[in-house]
Length: 439
Image (cartoon, rainbow, N blue to C red):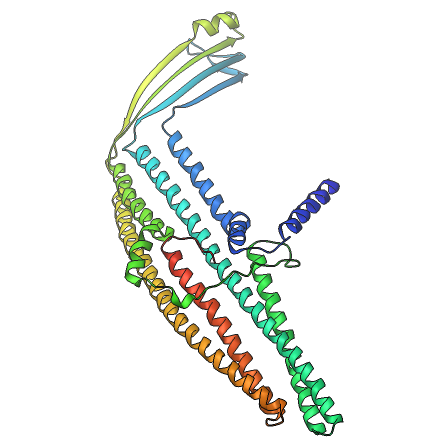
């Protein structure tokens, strides 16, 4: 058994390692997460449970059938047919087969089937909601990796530049053009740059871990993503939030689930009222028995079973007259639940509209920030290049040069962040309209 478990674990590990070969695109990550994420699997199990419940509700239309057999032995004194007591031993054997068919149950069975169908549809909508949540979470983690990758690239460039600059300053020290203080200052700058590089690498590793955990991969080792070709997201025309909402309210699964819950609560009122109606059922069965008494001679077993064979059929009706107001209160509770589900539906719609409004204004801000950061990064680059030329001819000090370089890299980092945030926010608006998330 242990050997089988070991082989299974090795196979799963091999498959997981195979799955991590090569860079992953955003659609690859989303599709893999939809198949393997545990939260989605739990929602899928809920759908299967609703299917079983619906099948049970449908099977209530079927007749019930049961068989029984009994054997009784009696010893000692007992009352005889002539109303006297005597010592005797008796045995009795009986067999029966009976069934019952529901004819009318106050529409309880019909409404139960309809409720089961609504439950299944709601669970399916909840599953799609869980899938949507995973899509958004994966996209957010994916964008964070892209951002951290760029920050690490910038941090490495900074460290490499500071190391080269330190060598240049040491050469100038030997030529007597700078003091030892400038060398020490640049050494401190290089140490800070290396710390920033280590921090950037740690942030990237954490973001890789976050995404691989969403994908339910065993380890982020060897995991890499595709860096998409990103155009100018600030040029994307944004739809007004009202127009996006009109489309989203028709396609988003959380709204669909809330609507189904309203339908369920409305039907539950009809089912509760059905308890006021009578119920009718048809029953029938077969039976026979065998009896012996030590005081009397008995017919053989087979003959008695034949002679005692009987059949019966019956029709019963149960009319509720007074149920201690249970039915009335059940109807009231069902009506209150219906009102509550209507309010919940409005809350879901209102929350969706707020989300879309927030996403819209985030996208507007992201586009403006992207355009502004692009200009700031370009200006900082030009300033750095001018300062570098002055530094080379001795008209600017190393501190001015480092400040210009740091300002440019900082502006470049902000521009990178603004680009990916703008990309994500604009794609998120399309996602609310029912489109797939992809870069």
